[in-house]
Image 1 (cartoon, one colour):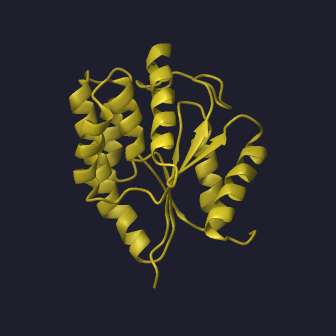
Image 2: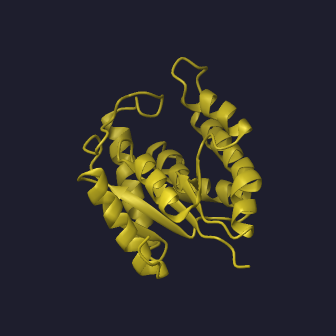
Length: 203
């Protein structure tokens, strides 16, 4: 039995990645999950990390907590599903930490990558679908519903710029797609790009 594919959706706040991850997961009958929060431990960490009104979290602590969520997520959900032959579609992965903590928080992409390489035991996504749009211009916009969404424009510009740098550095892993347009239009862009890459038939 061959292992499943690990597909990540990445993008800035309001880019529509959560919606598109759900659509793709249903279309290919994949395990749909998210970071942070895909496990019981992750749900608790997500509340501490993103909840408005929770105790302040420093940048390094934020990075380590994200990595802890990710380590549990991969061990408990992602790896077992892949080894059983099932595809996994995740709304965010370690690339979010590279963009948010490494780039926007100024901790350095290489330093944050090292932390996550250890946390993941080397299990990075097979392909990353980056839904690209200027901050605040996506289909959902920025609704300031959690602590990271409430960061200022400069922070989100840095997130966007870092994502594009990551994609340029790993062109074989990243698929960069325009996030603007209707949900149906974007989902067809996603499907077309992945079907071409993996030789999927239309389903």
